[in-house]
Length: 286
Image (cartoon, rainbow, N blue to C red; front, top):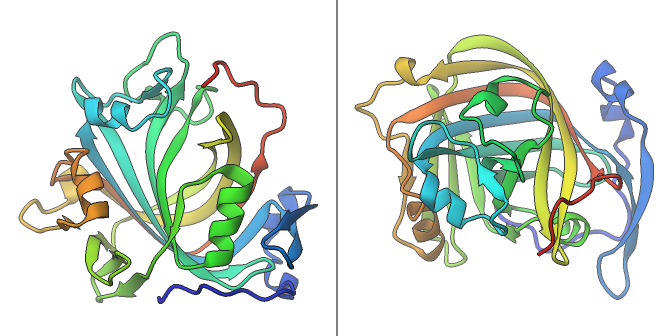
């Protein structure tokens, strides 16, 4: 999908697309955001997403390099094993977004604990909701929508960059390709479409930094994912390609292992993402 660098002054009228019972869990609230000198829009939050194709690649990486990505030393990457943390590439084709046109996005995140007394290996990842300090730090978030970039930067301080992102089906795999500003590839991920069907109904927190303040925002999603664990994934195939470009080199610096830890693929996912939690108490200062 080519990046769109313009947006309409009016909101997209597509509320009728969000009738799934999933959305009834949430109470919509208006939020005004000034996009430029002439246009202010009133968005409804949480933002609803529908009919989302999702391809997720989870990889092991250097825990030392992951720690260097953190904006504060008290933000600790979750340790999988000695010397290893996790990096997650969540690729989204948002076909329906409440109030705005659909777009493609890649959320590049590292699972973390915020100011933990003890950084327990892997348990925060598998014990849903048991670790209140657990969440995902967003270190990069390419999108194809300029309007969405403005929202991300202005509301959460999310590191959104506008670029071309292609997400397509090669029959066996969902392939995501991200391009530098000059059109050269820097990221290519292949996620198998087939796998063990597994129900996901997840609530978790994303962490970002705005105006030297750590923000916590809740994300929710529901879908049946086809899951492939490391033991199911052929090791003789190239699943993740990082190219020798400026953005590619940033990812290469994480020393990501070639063998994937897990793949997840879903079609028709329902999801939402909320405003920063106003009651979140930041345990440290920048």
